[in-house]
Amino acid sequence: MLDLDLMPRKLPQQSRSRETMQRVLDMAETLLVELGVDGFNTNVLAERACVGVRAIYRYYPNKWAILVELVDRSYACEREWVGHLGALKPGDDWRHATDRMIDGFFAGASSSPSYAVLRAACQVSPQLREVEARNVARFEADVAETLVALGMANEPRRLRIVAQIVIEVSGRLIDLALRADNPVEACLVLGELKRMLHDLLGPYLPD
Image (tube, rainbow, N blue to C red; front, side, top):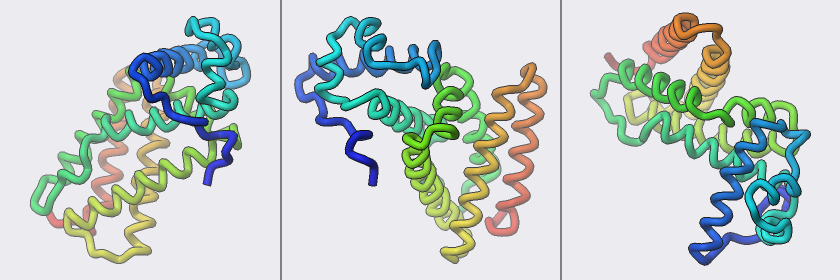
């Protein structure tokens, strides 16, 4: 359960308020990239978003609550980059699907200036670590459910471990690909990730 100081106070109801908060969050992402977590604060955000500080505090108690919202938005984007896992079914070419998901995730992360910054922030900020863990757990549960749908035996402990490995290895190697010096090296890293996942899942999924 998240600390109340890390949760929005309320959600904007009127369309104008929702548009204002969307603008605030978009600017928050921009500032996070520019200033980092330590330099990010609500006063600068209010000034750059052209709103009063009180308007921000009406919805968010502090800067950490805003950053939590940004992390949640980032994970929502990650799900879009991966595609709808629940659409996979027995008989589908799971290797092709896995490759497509990796490519989609990398393309999305590459085009998102805030993705790497938020990832790094979650590693060093206790306030964000729980949020990341919650979202990763949801991702792992989705992967486990998809593996069962594709034909893997429903052994809860093994499913959990395999799903954790899929998420952990994919995250680490996609981060490595994002830091690559050139597109050729990034492609090589992604190719190795695809091969690793094929080898990991091959014994459990039908051809």
